[in-house]
Amino acid sequence: MSRIARLALPPAVAVAQVVGTYHVQQFQLVSERLGREPLDWRGSLLLLVGPIALAVRRRWPVVALWVTLAATWDYLLLDFAYGYVFISPIILIFWAVISGHRRAAWLSSGVTYLFFVAYATWLIPVPQGWFHHAAVAAFLLLTLTVAEFTRARRERLVEAKRVAAEETRRQASEERLSMAQELHDVLAHNISLIHVQASTALHLIDDHPEQARTALATIKQASKDVLTEMRGVLSLLRDGAPRSPTAGMDRLDELVENSGLPVTVTIDGDVRPLPAGVNRAGYRIVQESLTNITRHAPGSRVALRVTYGPDELAIIVEDDGTGAATAVHGLGGGNGIPGMRERVATLGGSLTAGPRPEGGFRVTATLPLPAEETK
Image 1 (cartoon, helix red, strand yellow):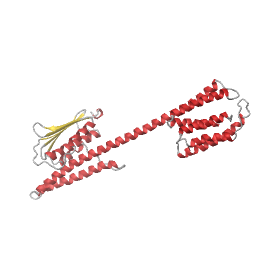
Image 2 (cartoon, one colour):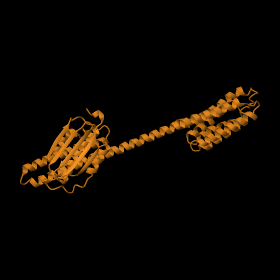
Image 3 (cartoon, one colour):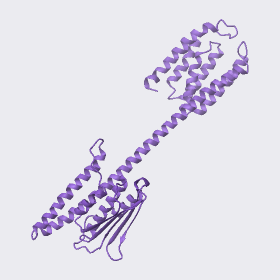
Image 4 (spheres, helix red, strand yellow):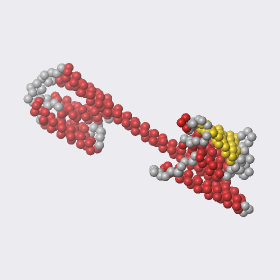
């Protein structure tokens, strides 16, 4: 209910109860069977108690309910006209249920029913029977039932909104984690490459300037690549921002070429489009593996084998450990292998990493492919 409707409800009910009662009493006063009395200042005052209680129902819902019912009982005991006086009690019983005061609503309704039974049996000129009592009970039960249904529906909507908000927060958290992982992979690989090539350029710039030029060109390309990929990842933070294509297995040749390592690439099976998650994870696994080799065994010969199976993508990256250059220090331990394991586990795959018996290091990853991706 809007704020305007909440403010308008009490005066609207006051007008309806007072004006409506003056109207209906014209027909009830002529009936000796009903035994009604003309409305006076006492009746008018009692008719205003309910609307006043409606104005404070949000702060004191139970007090407003009992005060209104007591005023209604007094009104009936003074033999004023039936009808519009019941508007306020109905609204406040309904409000007590949907505002969480169910016990008070049901208890007050039970007391009101007993009052009506006693009143209609002993306190009016023509006593009423079971039909009247059943009608009163049915009306009260209908009011309570509709109120309970409304309350339950509101609670379901609130719970649905809470679950939706929680899911939104969870997805946002996962997206932030994914972006952090992407940034780690991009920065770790390219900065390691830049560091190695810069060291090579400094070593060769005096005696072999042409080879130093090649290293500097690699640094230029690597820095360009890292800026491009960082823009692509960070653009996810801006709605409507242009997004660069995500790095995938179709860019392995470029990745190998820019690694500065002697890599032999073998592709087995039928090359085909991969699901986005598998495509990105496969690329990052190869990238992180080459980064680790650049850090710990630069110059080693590397064998990269990618196998497109019917229901899985297998990746093996291994080096012989005979690096001709000195390992790169000062780049930090990073989170490379644990990050790769986490990425693979998220997709339901497996990853092993460890030294080879004959020397060097091997990373083996298996990523499942969905049935619709197979041929």
